[in-house]
Image 1 (cartoon, rainbow, N blue to C red):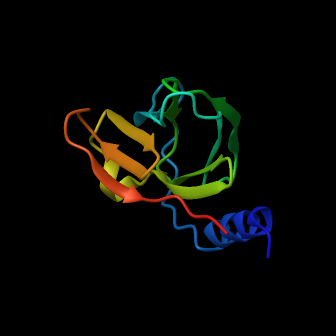
Image 2: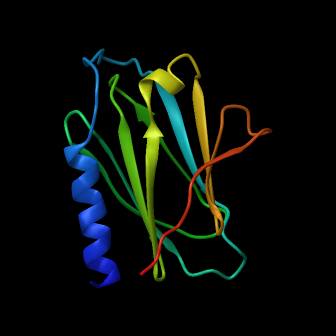
Length: 135
């Protein structure tokens, strides 16, 4: 099985197991701002990133991040948002926004490093929540 087919299977598994809560979308309001920061080693190849709502499966579009880039978006509904990344021969996924974990935090920060995906609400203390996979 190739890396790409494993990545697609991972995405399908995430879609099937998505758990979301009732939408609370209101005009002009948002629940939080999520930042995904590319903190990969200097001179790394760009990372491809895609995040989407687990409730509507509406994607935020595919992004290409270079080292140091900070991609951000507003969470508009009370649902789990899934992020997946591809970096060279590595792939990974994580919950970019998870209502039970993140509601009440105005900003959620994700730092993507070569050893995984780290979460913070204050940009001071970081907890690794996932890691890269490869074939």
